[in-house]
Length: 255
Image 1 (cartoon, rainbow, N blue to C red):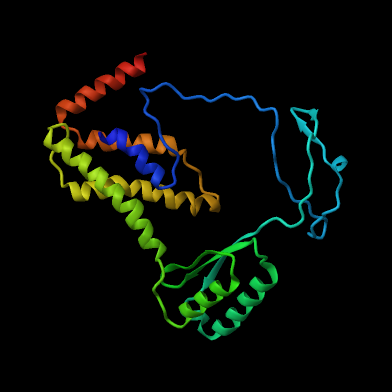
Image 2: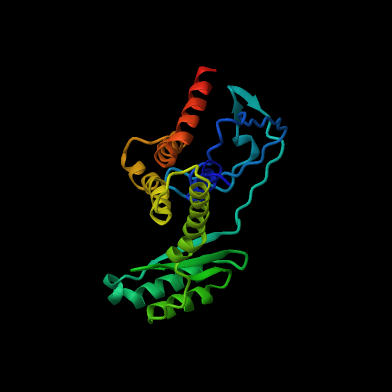
């Protein structure tokens, strides 16, 4: 597997859109839909749920043309999926019991048998203390054990490192070593080169989920990946391979 073919897989693992090869034709999917199902919630000016609206209260337009509402159903009690994120840092030590009581009261008041929830505690690490469950008592007990000092819970950062980053590193390093052994790439330290391959992708993932929300200029992921890949390969290729690729790029641009 070449580095160019491997790169989109790694980008996808970092929650970036997959980047297709330029040599392949653009993939398009065209479908016709006769019925579209959608769910919505209506609130009044005070933010309270409105549950007694009839079908005639809803109007749907497509390109300015009225559409027929064929089926309508009102569901007042849909199953809930709840995520609890608990601040378990040292600054909250004196509020532990208060927090536990609040969590217990909230879950017992809100959760029904068909609802489900999970809990994450964060301090120095982010840990999944309770996976999906429909039993409030399990979550409350897990949070209490965490607050008492038990740390035998999955550490989400380590899980991501092992399941995404480490696996990706192995694939990239294997591709680099193969390229060097075949003479396609110039000799490099594959361990450090692998980390340099990943560094811009990690930066893009961090940027996308942080600075993007602060008004920073957004970057097109496809262009970002293509530019990084071009710079990367030009830096790694030996002179013969580099000249060959440059000729193919010029030929493609001429077409």
